[in-house]
Image (cartoon, rainbow over all chains, first blue to last red; front, top):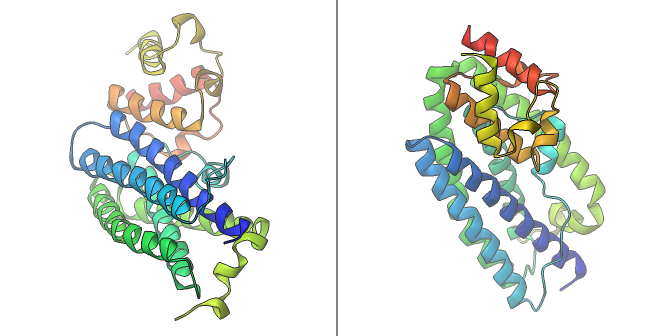
Length: 187
Length: 75
């Protein structure tokens, strides 16, 4: 295990905690209904994921590093503050797709530690449900906001995500480059 | 709804001393982080039964500017 492994797993853990904290606050703010219901489960999942990464680090004999930023923090700077539930869910959908892509790539790396592989496999099941429920909620919100506005909002955050991810990869290439290099994939 | 009523909502949502929330108060000074600002904006919409979109808050920095946006939605 390298310091890079420790850094990336600590980064995953920190981002899951940030996501849990945000959704927890939203779950308290939103009125009762299907979105509040599923958002509360989503918050619980993110908390659980933070625990899974903590456990994986422990199994690998590593302690989590104290991180100073989460991936999500950079969205606000790049895309502006979401102001309603449709904008928040659009941003969430973009982020969830990014997370799935990142975890899928990490899971394909040759000789990835079994604890990492097992954690990714477990989390991926939840992530698929996250994409599903947020997608359904956004479809439902088309009635209030209009399908075109929902589509444009998603596109706005998708473009912001591209910029944020590109900057993230550039800044941390030394730490995550091996995960992104397809030559390192087992399949 | 009067502007003072909306300020009263803001005081409750932000859980701060009433004296801190004036028309010239900077919104980001009233919250601990950007997530708290999002939380407040969502709760304010619920309280006033209005819907804001991102463009509505472009350039909004003070409580007074936020009140202008809410007043326009309520009109």
